[in-house]
Image 1 (cartoon, helix red, strand yellow):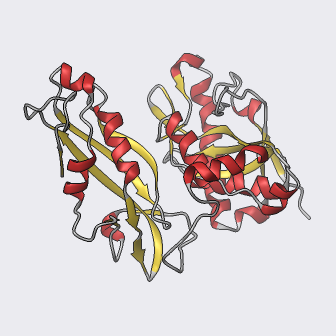
Image 2 (cartoon, one colour; image 1 turned 120 degrees about the horizontal axis):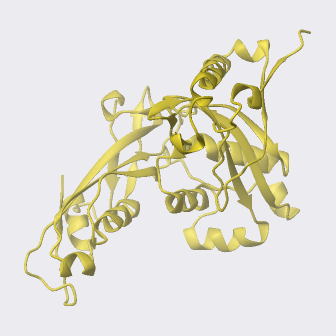
Length: 314
């Protein structure tokens, strides 16, 4: 068997500025090596892995001429607090690990390509086979912004860690209202691809408890005009983008157009309240991007009074 080729990252980048880490509470600074084998290259994932490695190696020509201040590491599309919320909503504790009360922090290393794709995932701090697999599953659902050097996207190695606490899992399930992820529409596409709405045979649709309720009515009834925005006479439109998952929940929420005074946060709160029927392609439930615009308008109503100013949906 041919011996695998190991490319040490410290040779790729003498300044070590493209080795970055994002953890939930701290920046990981461990040194890792990137392993590439001929067998891996035969698969689609292996090809992406190889391309990202080439881009990573190309970074040496730029990195030697710049300082760490000129480099921006990869980061999730969602803000950190939304990533934490997403992990809590998505985590499914393996039964055997829950029964044995196995817990700990799984650390992962991977490469974020110039288009935000993730490849070469490996476990650098394992806990158990079940928890390691669950951490990888969650990581694959997170969308990323590529890192850059002087504004130019670069393939960069990155790290991410997920904590598993068996003792707190029961309370977490009670808080979110479920202990397993349900998929009401079967079968489910497992490729992980996120489609644009135009690519879906059936686009995602919001679902409400009342059959007569529309998205506009839901927002008008549930919107709470932020007091700070009301006091400062702030009005305008918030535009957010997210992924409707095959199970009907949303993920990877990020803002395309923000508005001050707490309006952006209120729009995100409303979006997270909505349940969806998933998009369908080739008779499978798929992941689909969706965009929501909510307009905050001042209509002479008091925030401290009974009814908040309703919003408009586009």
